[in-house]
Amino acid sequence: MSVENSRPTLSINLLGARQHWLEGMLRHEIGTHYIRGVNDARQPWHGSEGRKQFGLRPANPTEEGLASLHSVLFRKQPYLWRAALLYYTVSCASKSSFSELFHSLQQFVQDPSVRWEYCVRAKRGQKDTTEPGCFSKDQVYLDGILRILRHRHTIDFPLLASLGKVSYEDVEVLRKFAQLENTRIPHFMHDLNKYQNQLCHIMETNQLSDEELRQALPD
Image 1 (cartoon, rainbow, N blue to C red):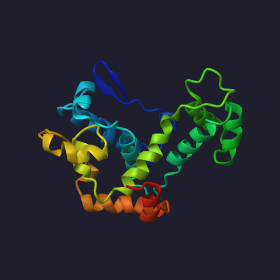
Image 2 (image 1 turned 135 degrees about the vertical axis):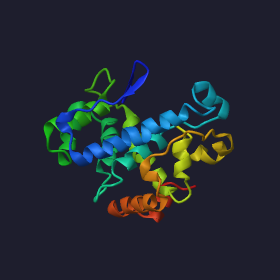
Image 3 (image 1 turned 180 degrees about the vertical axis):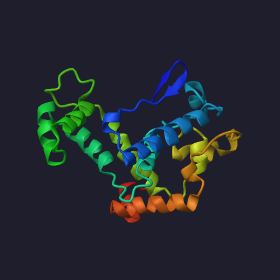
Image 4 (image 1 turned 90 degrees about the vertical axis):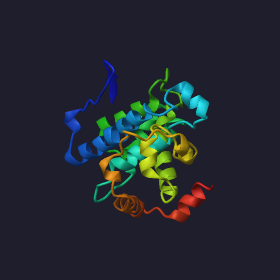
């Protein structure tokens, strides 16, 4: 997703496009990032000065965590392996060279070209890739996923979408200031019971428990 001539533009590499991947990608990019971006533009905290005035937390890891959950929301087997692998890759890259990272990922990614892409993502921006070091942003996906699942019973998801690019932790504080007229929520949030059941299905499929999440992410 990029902005061209003031218009959000989605570019898709059709070589790797598959039906279920494409559906998840659209929920990720349009159903989450685009809709939250449009809604954000209607809010009094839009822009860096507005965010500073309201004392907002960074949008990540909520933004990418929410988008990542939506990527697998309707899959029969909504595994979170990609977010986990991105997190693991960054962790390994911080301690190893590009070559060492490439070889260590072979146990999880057999295709050399796909493994190369993971390594490039983790090492991008580094001047000397023979040295340990990483670009750590890719860890926000799993971080955000686990935090949202941890608090899924208390988050007002339609309001989280309507408020724009804000953290789930700021939702209740911003509620009384929100401009909700003409804001949008994604279609898959219209039935909240179904949405919550899908989040529970993601938990079960990935063998996560509420107790584990409470221990990993205490209040």
